[in-house]
Image 1 (cartoon, one colour):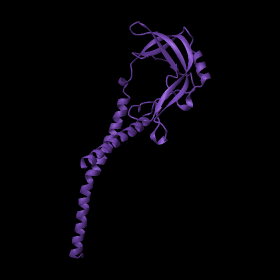
Image 2 (tube, rainbow, N blue to C red):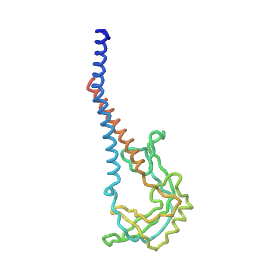
Image 3 (cartoon, rainbow, N blue to C red):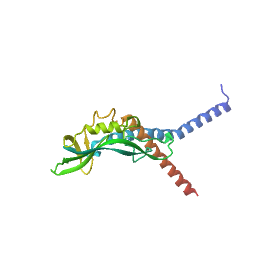
Image 4 (spheres, one colour):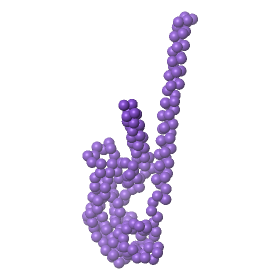
Length: 217
């Protein structure tokens, strides 16, 4: 049988344990709630990002090739951030790039076309193949771009799609090159959203801490 002193000491330890648990529970609950909220926000961001209402509406038409050429194109690739999280190609902070942005260069077939819009007006536009910068292992050289250009005959009509207010049209480019630019997967979107969300949350905490230090001075 325990002595009164040991019994009292045991009761004190139990009381301290319960006090510690009661103190830590709100913090653990807040962290858990933050994780759950972050997960749902990421899911919501993916759903909203995939909505077609954010993309320009395309209209079908017939494009007449006026001229064709090959030109060197450039694409600006930047570190992942709030303004470019939906871009096909970005680089991440852990890749230790010297600059926040750089330019990628690639050869492209450039087609000057004429099409009739929905108001029956003749419009001039440009179609490019590829129409965006492909990955580094999928960029056509000058010869491939020249051969792709020759597949579109001047004065011939081809099916195309245009968007209001945009001077570029899209022509079916399937099979012109060995590979095409791929759409972002859902996993990659979740990864990017989580990185951007973590940065925003970190910046918010840092700002709150600096404000707290400023008030205490």
